[in-house]
Length: 478
Ligand code: BGP
Image (cartoon, rainbow, N blue to C red; front, side, top):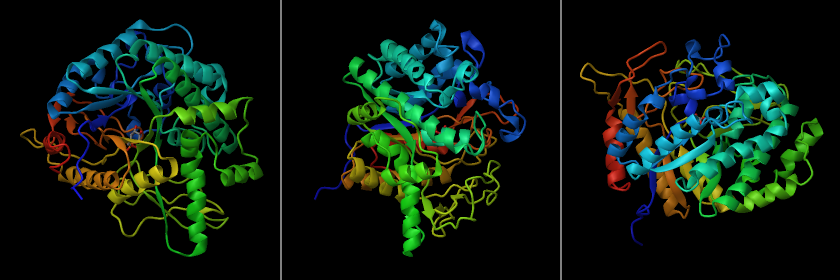
């Protein structure tokens, strides 16, 4: 057998999100978003950090894209802020907002970088929150499709790759279960599943609309996938893995891939009184969209260990490590079903995220077996403290080691037969980490700013030069 080689058109990329990089939160007619409001509630983010200025990408996008081009990036995944396009969510279109993204897209294309657009990466026009509680109302479905359609009509000829929703599982879980994201609700399971159903419908109708308008484009959702392992072969722990997968993974991926909820999880929620309500026609729409998606988008950071959790055991509500003090995060779980203890075989980051490169292969294999869909790795990366030396260099061998190990496993997955179209690291420049401030850095490019201020100047880290070689050699030199 010949040694495996990455396909020639493989999309080596990097990803960001509007709120985390752009700044300019009040410029050029942009409406306020749920995040603009949420970060102003005392105690919600690390040291009260906001994305008001973020890393100034709104003004420095040309410099950033030039740096990406020099690195050889084949694709840049970024998100569009709904409130720049339609400031109040469902009213007038703001030409200045469209113009900003058009310029960004053109800048990418100028260098041969394939733009990959995320339609929604968590920043919702606050006006929709005020008008009808945002995702809690089915009204959002048509407003979302309308917004997406504006984007398709304007950018559809230039942008081939589209992602409907970024990590629906995360923004809904943190938004309605643990109050860590807007709208900051706690333990509201009934609303949580209904909110998810609305988000699924918005995704599905958007996919269907997209295919009518841009039949040659590619579209899918990006899911925060945590593949799971049972802690051991005790049958009750094996069962806990099954419960975890149904409720935490397949609940989302089965809708994207099959257009239906996993049966046992749905039954469990029915018994609890939390199952979502369907409107007439929803079932067919979900199925139709699933038959039309082009890929499963995967944001991969870590795997989970599953162990039986007694009914009086740990809950989904626990302290999250947002400070970078190792070991300050707590174990979570679903009473009566599963809990997720640490994996004794694996290291963790300073923010207690498990480092498991082989989990990427494992997850790709699972998706391929279960859904037989191509895969876009839309995020993967290491959040770490970085230090800029006197001479402006940044030595981040830990990030290189992390990415190298993950790419090696990705290649194995592809050699196993998984069709992977793209690999986007999180992130290209340093950026705002939603709850963890600016000290948790992910980029190849260091941005000189901390929680308070900074020059915003860009500096190349060692990993920048390393990824350039990876891309140049199409993954041969790691
Ligand atoms: C994903 C999000 C990204 C990004 C990343 C890193 O969940 O899609 O927006 O933030 O995780 O997470 P964090 O910033 O919490 O370290």
